[in-house]
Length: 325
Length: 291
Image (cartoon, rainbow over all chains, first blue to last red; front, side):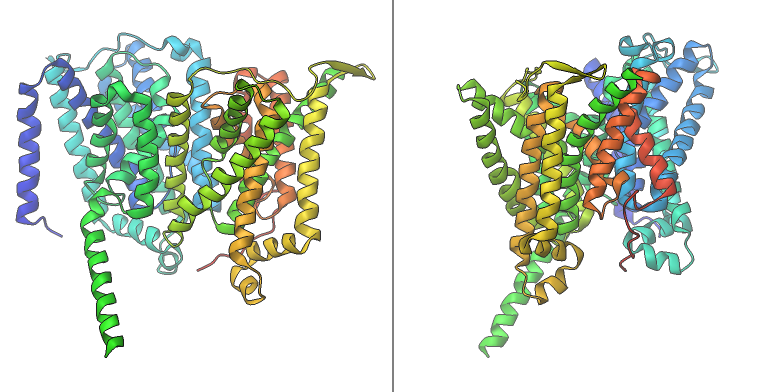
């Protein structure tokens, strides 16, 4: 599949906006924008796991935590960011395999429970192992990287680094999804048994999609730590894992741009509704329930949903006409 | 040795409380295919209902009855009519996401509308302890064990010995065949939701004195219930009891003899170990895949 002209124009406009927009923003706005991009990276990975491969993963924030702590701890030990970041990605990938293997051997739903428990265990680890993670005090003063004398410590410079990595990881995902691998993922989601009978090794592919999703969260975490300079266990808890899952689903799981929309809703809306924080979450939660009932495909499926109900209505009227005749 | 026995007894007591939440969870899954990720919040809500009842001056027994009634109405009938029924046919993923949303919604609703602080909760049983052969046992542990045991056994009898109970089992095993035999499938599914609502209210009554009433108390209970249900075997209601007790006892022992910091991780490890060896749970029977 090659990109259509309108798609290319859309992408170009988006990229130009990403490059120009920050020059108009103040510090906090720039921080939010950077955070949004970091969330997009994580949500892209989760979209592969949930949207394309059909698995439910509930420890995405936990994987992000592994990435963030790995980078923070390694950099404190004097390792360069450029080695720590790949380390974080690989570690998350390996943990994905470790948790995914037993659960996926049995049933897709079991992955949900296994990941839920794993996130809880991770939180215990982050809190209890003070010698390594600093416990509830966390790790402070995480430096931003530099490369060949080029420093990314400024907010704007770091932002451009994140833009670059976001674009690279999105492109990698797009490439992956168009490869035979991506086709196998979609086949798995749509009908695992048929996929198996055409020679797709179910366990291997589901496991891979989960582990790759985890690796994306690792990259997001690796960028999150230097972005906020200070990490502690709270942002990596179960609540945020659920939020990640909802980002993907609200945006439209299995749609490439779903996570972009979903993470904007999950991140930016609460900022504007800060005065109503807990009520906002309450409304958000119930809204997800309503949406799942009315629009299970997510916000980006609204067009098809409307077309479908129109077609249904048309079919009904033609039926009743036929009966009248 | 006495330490060990004490840990064992309190572990069995906690485990049997987990088992009740696990049992309700299993029943819903079997009868209607509903994987309820909000089961923990379903325990939290009756706890707060009782707390409100107590704060307006009701005695605990009345507050409990009110909580059961509210629970059956809201978490039984309301949940079924408003969330599960309209989603019939949209698949498991949609319902999982919806119940996750429900879980966030209920938690935040209680946090924003009532309080974010933990609230002490009176125990039904005396806080005193007694000694038996050198082992110190608390009345509340014994009470919880007896209560939970009676609930689970009573439910077993109901499911196996009464026509209604057998009808419910038939629906869980094969909905079409049950309908063909003239069983009122809709009503049986409603009963399942009502029983789950009662189970969570009793769970709340027994566990809140130790967990304290807090908006996020359901996180932990829900997780233990899921794991207990799967460890015991999903298609066997006795499995929930076994799974619950195993989780309760092992986390107590691990907390005392290995490390208290990772007590809450025991259920996960046990779960992973069990599904590696016996994918259908300890008491479960293999299920055929549906194409």
